[in-house]
Image (cartoon, rainbow, N blue to C red; front, side, top):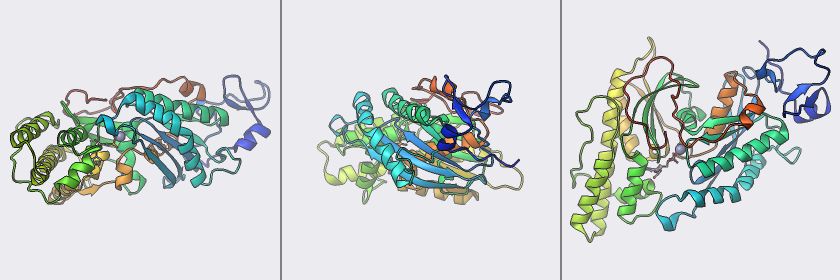
Length: 416
Ligand code: KG4
Ligand code: ZN
């Protein structure tokens, strides 16, 4: 079906469209003259075949981020801008302080959005003309920050009469490899971030089955706590990785969590305790002690992630004629040792590994824009009145309404 072109803001405000009291655009004329439009036609949107230019906003932790992405009718995408401001206000506290994060998002959100629009050339009318829809993280995450991002996006959508798409932050990570790679469905996803460590089967946009999750700490949290314990600063992942360079990964024999436990769950609290005990025993720590602890910890973390992933790969139902794909996403996917361990694993199994570039692994708004665009393209254009009424969610599991199969199980992750 040929798609109708999305009417520009100018066309909507000056020609055949009226803004209703509920904030909906509708074609001019009396009710009798107008054919009743299905809800998804509210914006004159034929998403399947239209080119969509979408603004994404991400504020769920300590990054204030905005990006503009264009999705073409054939499914190809272009990232027109990707602005990330990482808050440095938390350094003295050894972790992200939610209240400080929320206030910092308030200060930065408008500037970051303005930069994303300017870099993408979306300034013909001075206020973001050319943007067809806006997507923002609506959870899970630190609630104060999520509120700031959602309110910014809602104001943007309402003032321009364009759809507002609330996005699950985890869906952004789940689709992030598709920002830069040809990555068809289905694939096995290892989502490793500061708040989550999960294995998911991804069968399509909105089709996620969680296979396993952490029963205690997330992988990124273990890196952050290790860094804190060793006085390396935050965020811990890159600091531990840097300190581990030149360290002896064989000096400490850290535990292999859940070694004989079936299923695909993870556990990092035992590793964290082992690191603490090793550090206490050697105190005061010399430079090579820190390097050796970091190298041994990183090795153990990579081994654990690879071992649980290997199980899920073995049980993964690959469609006939296809081959296996493993995607890693989330901030911890930036870790070179973990990438190396998973590369060795997929090579041994004849699978392929897809990892987004580091800037799309850690929190960013391009992945939120992509998830929003994919939702629109799937044909589900939500009514503005409906999405404006939505509240942010601190917890929001990706497979909330699982359809079809679900393997394994496990407790809910810290934020999911
Ligand atoms: O995805 P992300 O930016 O935010 C969340 O949604 O949590 O992930 C942040 C986490 C932090 O725990 C950080 O220490 C970790 O990702 N991280 C890394 C590396 N870079 C970031 N962990 C290990 N190695 C890295 N190179
Ligand atoms: Zn994240």
